[in-house]
Image (cartoon, rainbow, N blue to C red; front, top):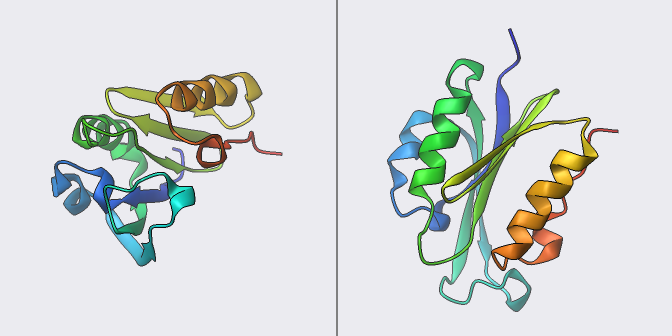
Amino acid sequence: MSADFVGVIIEESLEDKAVLSKVRIIKTKVEEVVERHKTPWVKRWTLHTVGVSAKKAEEIAEELSNSLDSKHAWYADFKNDTIHYIIFRKKVFCIDRNSKEQYDEAKQYGISLGIPEYQVNFHPKV
């Protein structure tokens, strides 16, 4: 049985916030938006560090994918020692954490949506 997952969900990225009730919120940090974030339509980001049960990971990933903002490009992610879920609206990457190729594919997808490259700087486990 694989271990539970930990990741970050930005509350402002969600059209439907119901998914937040299905994860364990470990901590919350509010960050003022600056130009570098490239999200001028929001004043702040509410970053929730979350825990996701291994049994529910795939289901939560799909729900997040359907809950993300349909007007702007965002992603959410969570990972454990072996798997990294990178979730965009209507597209979920379930990545082997040792695979540079899978990470590159997710990164290129994010960039193609207009997400700044520094925000999708995913790396395989070293």
